[in-house]
Image (cartoon, rainbow, N blue to C red; front, side, top):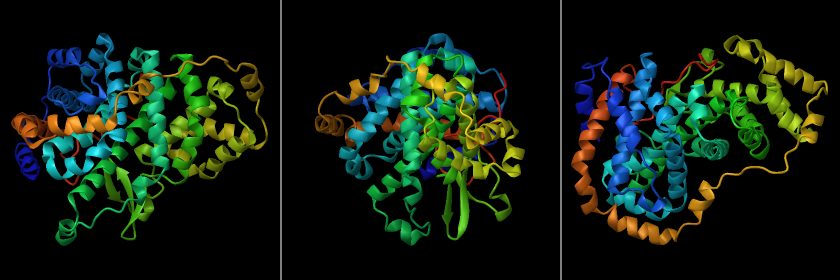
Length: 430
C-alpha cells in the first residue's frame, strides 16, 4: 500500500482539473450497477462494482468541489439507481455483523492488503457517495419509499454506534516503530475497521440531516419513522453533549476535521466542526418544523432530555449557526411549558405504519458459518486474491492519484477513499 501512495503522489500535480469519468462513462457505470447477496460479498463481480462505486464517489466529489455539472447525481436520479446503493449499505452491514467476525482472523492474516482495504472501506464509500448526492432535494425525492425507510433505519443504527463511544474508547497504537511492530495483524485490522465504521457513521449523520431537510416533501412514513419509531431526537442529544468526533490524546484536544484527527488550539475549542453543525441542524429540523413536532410525543422524560442542550445555546453557537435562533425559541417554550403540538400528536396517531423489510429478509438467509466457509475458500483464498491483484492495483493507483488531486492540502490524511468535502452545513442552495 505504501508504494501505491508514493506513486500516486508523484503525479499529484498533473491533470488537477480533469475528471476521473466523463458523463457518458458515469452513466454507463450507474446503469450497470446491481445488487448482491450477502453470500456474494468478496466475489470478483462484487469487487469490480466496488471499484466502480469508488470512481463514482470520487467524480461526484470532484463535481461538487469544482461547482461543475453534477452528472453523477443526475444519472442516479434519471436511472433510478439509489435503491441499489441503499441495498448495498444494508447488505454489507449484515455481512459485516454476521460473517466478518467468522472471517476476521483469516482476512487480517491471510488476505492481501488490497482485498482487506476494499472490505474495510466499502460501506464508507457507498455512504460517502450517498452523502454527496442526497444533498439535493431532487435526489432525495428520487429514492423510493421502501429504500428511504431502510436508509433511515441504517442511519439511526449508525447514530447509536456513535453514542456507544466505542470509537473514543479504542486506544490507537503508538506511532513509534517499536510499538507498531508489536501490533498483531488482527489488532491492526480491528483498528482500521473501527476507523472505517466511524467514517460511515459520520456520513450517516449527514444523510439523516439531509432527509430531515425535506421531510415536508418526502413520504409521510419517513417522518413517522424518523421522529416516532426511531426517536432520532433522543439519539442526537448525547452526540451534542459528548461528541464522538472530539477526543483527548496526549493531553491535547483533537477533533475529527476532514476525516483527520487534528489537534486544536484552546481558542478554537468552541468552533463547530462539520459534524457538530449537522447534528445541530437536524435537531433544529425535528424540533422547529410543525409537522415533526406534531408527530412527536414530548413526554416529561423527553422534554428534560431535549432541554439539556439549552445550556449550549450561547452567542458563540448562534454566531456560527444563526439559523438556530428558532430552535432557541422552541426550547424556551418547552421550558415555560408551552406544548401546543402534543394534543395534536395524540389525536393524529397512525395505527398502521409501513415498515422496512429488506434487512429482515437478509437476516433470514442461510447459515452464516456456511457462508463464511465458502467465502474463505472461493473469494478470500491466496489463489483467488492473486487473480484480482493486478487489476485492483491499477484501479487503486488511479483512484489514489485522483484523490490526491482532490485533497492536495492534506498530505497527513490517512489513506481512505472517504472524502472530506461537504457542502455548506448552514443551508441548502436549492
